[in-house]
Length: 308
Image 1 (tube, rainbow, N blue to C red):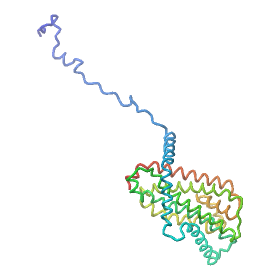
Image 2 (image 1 turned 90 degrees about the vertical axis):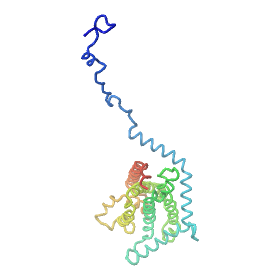
Image 3 (image 1 turned 135 degrees about the vertical axis):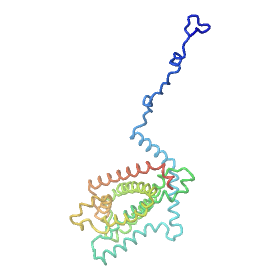
Image 4 (image 1 turned 120 degrees about the vertical axis):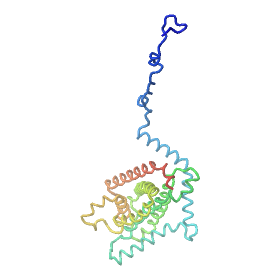
């Protein structure tokens, strides 16, 4: 091949040499993604601490909304009745009187102080069952409000817990009006009642969060709650004493509501301090209930709007 014009040394490249030049070599593949790892996110414990801190700030911010929802619900509940809030005192007394007559006379369960025993179990149970039943539908029933404005969704279960807690406290106050006629007297262990009520409210709040989450995604859950509560009621020593179960009494500790009901009965009926083991068991159950309910609710909170 003749040298190219302007190439005095005859160094012109042939076609084969051009085809094998570096310019025509295959492109270098891009580096693998593992060479550029994504920055590590916060650990799971740090993440939940951040969620708790954010919810605490939102609770402070939206607390007036919670107060307004609670007060409005209580006003609407009794606005057309003549007795008004007095029904919160009369309802437990009338219920206790009816059950006392039935179980004391018809079923021959005569026992000294049976009316107080029944009251000490029925009033807390009414609070628990009412809270769980109402929490099951609290997200679904507030669908319109959730779609219109931004509100933390845990406000709705919390509101139902507080509404039933106010009714519970008013019902418990009726106890001090009937202690005298029933032959009982206020005792020093009653000073522990606020602690027991607080633990019981935490326990109910955890169950309410869990049930509201489950029923939002599986609507059959709401219908099964009432059936479950009815069975749970008869498995809890409220209308009968635990000693009637004989050897099966030890199995009552498998019932998470038993330590709470037992403490109410021990303080109100017997006038004694509850065992430290019972108090510790109630505190542990309340903590576990709230932890499981809170984690279940927050893990699915962002998905709830798509299931409404």
